[in-house]
Length: 369
Ligand code: H2U
Image (cartoon, rainbow, N blue to C red; front, top):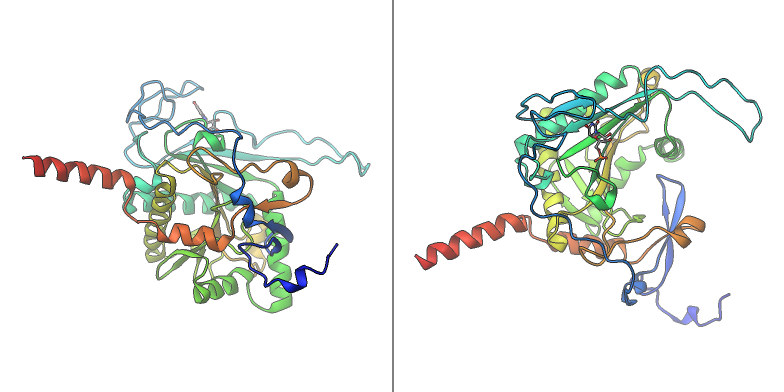
């Protein structure tokens, strides 16, 4: 395996492939940054639609329009929450009964699915919303965790942004699925954080945020209450992890000041994302906090609230990272180092390219006059 040559080389993470450990998933990722140099002749994605109308009379998510189930949306002027008309989880599904064979196991799955529109306009996205408007979304998220979490052990808030991430509608919105079971990803995060606290005596992500804030190498944006990093173990090219600096278990525990501060940091991060390739940046994002329902009565202090952003783009607005062959059959692999990704995001302006373009246009018109 080792030809003896490797001993003579000085390790450089940008040049030499290596493995990194993801302590939240108890798994490893292959980092091979030198692969960014390979030519790309593969699939080229469509650039996201730029001319979305503010109000489309046929879009079921717009104010005043009729949805698939015949219900008419109110003329909402802020956030708007409704039950998903095509829910993957329903509250009253019958029990499948038990099959005791280990190869044919089944369990009951119950829950509710909701959709939340962020804003009445279809031509706006979170980075272009005002911090006060994002704050309303955060308050609604916290309310939903409180309300649905009073009975359900897991409430997953997630946003699929852009057609590339399977989003079916350009209107700014997220989904909320509450389930009677702890899904695989949070169950893994639960086990890993519990084990870490038992072994090292501190919540994993609290310690992690402190160490990243000190090192600065992978920090993208930060403020008094929050920190965004490209995690040491990131798998998606420009994946980020949003962490509070204080120990917080769940969204409803955030103070008013922390929520305002969260709205600001989300806007800064998402503006940088859009500025990277001057495109409305696609991603799937979601919140992970301590489980709820019956877990509310248990000590969950090993948990730390956090949000994951998983964007698929790699090289440009049209070339994405595919998690296919090796990733599906062997192990996750990434092409640029998390430090390189963080550096690129950090260097980007916090003024949105669309806002800047409008300002530049206005200035040039003033000069002509
Ligand atoms: P996505 O864009 O992430 O697919 O979310 C849109 C959701 O909105 C989707 O889950 C729901 C779809 O079921 N929806 C309704 O509930 N009613 C409608 O009339 C259209 C879309």
